[in-house]
Image 1 (tube, rainbow, N blue to C red):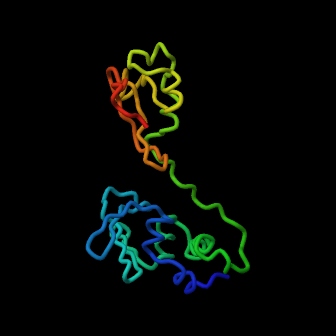
Image 2 (image 1 turned 135 degrees about the vertical axis):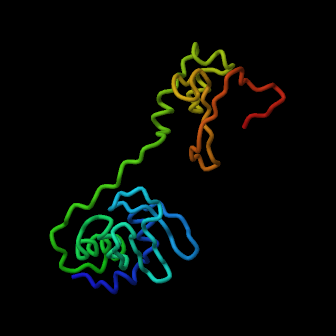
Image 3 (image 1 turned 45 degrees about the vertical axis):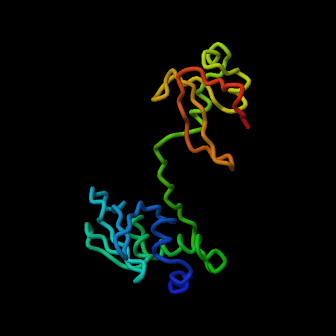
Length: 186
């Protein structure tokens, strides 16, 4: 059995909305606003979440409640099923008498830019990159290469990384990118 009060004490409605449910919220004074994934309307302010009170309200469905009710509303499950799913995340060591595990909804696939796929699609052969003044070896070592599609088509795509190695984007260059001898390249 799950102690609903202990569950509510182990997390808060903001963490559930942004972390567990992955709602795209916007700050509106002391509240958070988001489109309702359950009602699937086009109103970006359909859900209002008030972290100070630990409550939500869906204007489209005219329903409200606490963090367990929020999960129930968004996933279309009962409060008990929602509480069990939340307890697995927020109270892992306090679950007793677990009923049969129910499949949790899979996170939606994100649409967007796949940097690894993009890097693999770049051409790094010497005949492809020599016009930019770089060698195939340098391209292989750094991840840059000739882009054959998209906004950087026909350009040398150069990965831009943070100091810790995290890839944050690409720069497309059309022309000779060889550095003058007086530049120091680290």
